[in-house]
Amino acid sequence: MMRTNYNVEGGDFTKAGNVASCVKKTLKQLNVNAKIIKRVVIALYEAEVNIVAHAYQGHVTIDIDDQYITMLLKDKGPGIEDIDLAMTQGFSTASAKVREMGFGAGMGLPNIKKNVDELTLESEINIGITLCLKVKLTE
Amino acid sequence: MKISEVVDQLNLKVFSGYKGLHKEILGAYTSDLLSDVMGNLNEGYIWITLQTHQNIMAVSSLKDASAILMVKGLSPEASTIKMSEEEGIPILGTELETFEISGKLFMLLNQ
View 1 (tube, rainbow over the protein chains, first blue to last red):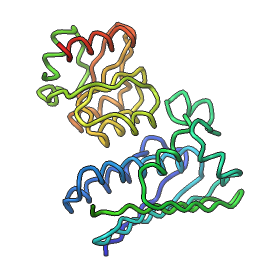
View 2 (view 1 turned 180 degrees about the horizontal axis):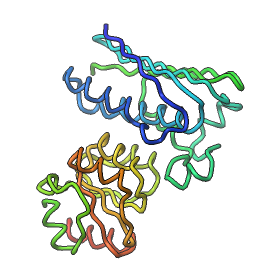
View 3 (view 1 turned 135 degrees about the horizontal axis):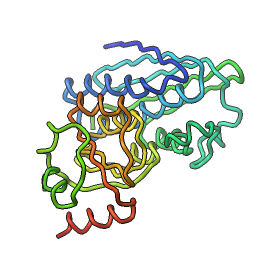
View 4 (view 1 turned 135 degrees about the vertical axis):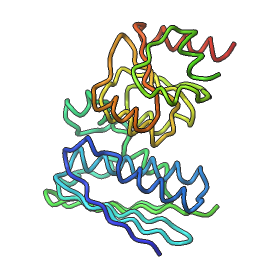
């Protein structure tokens, strides 16, 4: 098994996507099917942007074994008040500034859900979120 | 069709990423919402948008877009140009509005 750790700074949009980019390269080197890489990249990018847009800081742990990629994203931040609502397409709590940049359309979590095989989301208000995503690497 | 041919045919400006102009275009997608593009833009597509900040390069790179096309005479920010050069993904520009340039590109790619 292979484990990599990354830190994600809340509010720093200049680096948003760096984790997804690193993981994409790794999966390509491992000759993972292109369609599966695309799904991982979409889910991970959205999860990463969520930390940047909503939390103060985050920590991402990526585990890859011969069957699965497991992406654990833990952040310190406001948490999610209503998880069902947050999973609804179009619902967003993003700031006006973030929306002007084309983020915060309320598509992040729905995009994540659509592209992973397993998703668990735990939230504690004013403490943070733990999001665990799993994608099967073999067809 | 290659990006360079589209540039000639539609009289587009090239801001950056010249080394990627030889790439083939497989289609195009028009949107200003980054999540929408993450979910729906296909590999080898031109992305038509009014966004100019550097995050559009991260999205383009992750999605293997062939180029970005900025509408309405907008110009990329310096950090966006820098990433475009690094990634070899060209940033193109037009004075036309989104509807018009999308229509023209659609006609060109479906000739």
